[in-house]
Image 1 (tube, rainbow, N blue to C red):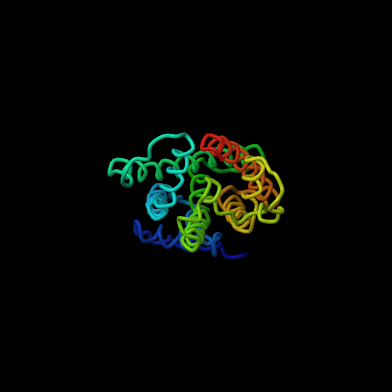
Image 2 (cartoon, one colour):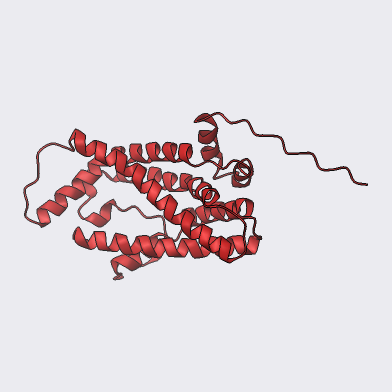
Length: 245
C-alpha cells in the first residue's frame, strides 16, 4: 500500500513583505507564486502595492503629461495655466491610479472567471483577481521602460499626443509612411513580447488556480487578452481623437 501524500506545508505570510516579494517573483516564477496561494489567494495588499508603484510612475511622467496638456490646449486655442499640477490634482491623480488598477483587475478577473467556468474549470472570482494582479508587474515594467525612453528623448521631443505613447509592440514593424487608424495602431501596439510575457503568466495562473488543462488555460487567457485589447484600444482611440491625435 502506498503511503499517503504528506499535507502541503503552510506558506508563511508577512503582510506587505510577502506580497511584494511575490510580485517581484511573479514574472519569473509564476507557478510557484500561484501555488503558494491555492488555499488563501491574496488581492488587496498586492493591489495597494501595485497602485502605489503605478502612481509613482505617473508622477515621474508628469512633465510629459503636462507637455501633452499644453499641446491640447494650444490646439483648442485655450490659455495655458501657469505652473504645474496643483496638490488637489496630484492627489486625484494618485487615487486615480489605484482606481484604474482596481477597475482593470476586476474587469479582467470577471472575464477570466466566466470563461473558466464555461470551459469547466473550478475557481472563484477572488482567485481570478489574484491571477490578474500578479500579472501586473509586466505592465509596471512597460511603464518603467516607457519612462526611460521618454527621458532619453526629452520633453521637447513631444510634438503631438502620439509622441508620449511609447510602444514595444507590432506597430513598430509597420512602415513609417503607412496610414493607420488610431484603433488599429493601438491594437498593434498591444501585441508584443511584453504582452506575450503577461499572457504566459495569466495562463500559468489559470492552470494553477483555475484547475483547468493547459489547453484550456491558454484558450481562456488568449480570449480574455483579445477582449481586453480590443476594448482598451477602442477607448484609447476615442481618447486620442478627443485630444487631437
